Length: 282
Image (cartoon, rainbow, N blue to C red; front, side, top):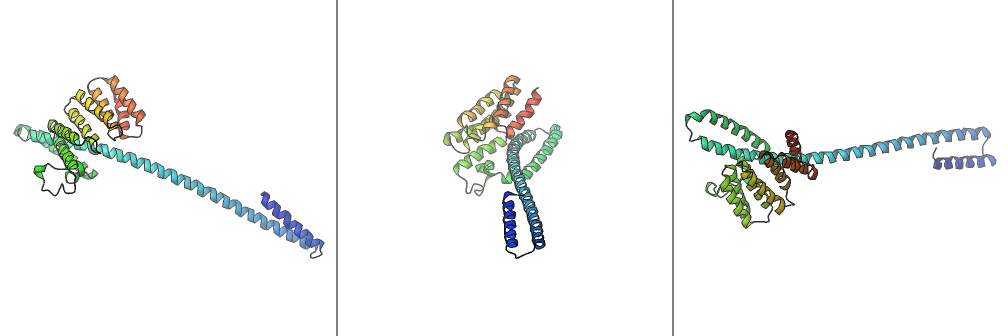
């Protein structure tokens, strides 16, 4: 029994005792009243205990819901990062496939089998692009078509900065790496500090990486890290540096960089890829 209830019981007994002294009730009546009071008090305390238990249960449920929401938000963020990286990789592969198709178009019948394989790969990429919402017909700011191929409507509402960036990115997708580098460098001269500048610098590194020029790619990725330290392309740039060193056979440097990514950017898709690559390098 709680201290408050004990005080209430004592008060009631005192009142009942006073009533008995004043001759308002018999001893039998007083005992009956006291018994009723005790029964009611016990029932009330049981209800209070039940309410306390319910309150604790509700608080526990609230904590569980809050933890679930936090976990869901974290998973959504991770999924978003994974999708972003997948989109970038698919776009790079699309550029390679498009370039291969152009090379094969002049190869004659001897390359028919290879052309069929490239077409099948292209179809799979198209399916993934449609699934992720990055198909050519809806590539957003990174899929602005070349000026010679649009009708003016596709660039409506876009800034000169976005048009120039999109044109360079379209060239990269076509597999014209040297030309795309020149266009991205021109973009950076005009717009060295915009929300697209770190992306442009990153794609310059990617163009070298795609050509197998890993030393030059490492240097270009380093420019992303040094010039745009707050940008979202820093973790991917570290990752690609590590992969480039691995391609060059320098596994020691590759491991050091990949381990640093995991330490400094533990919750990114780049860190997850770094863990996988580290296991492969062992």
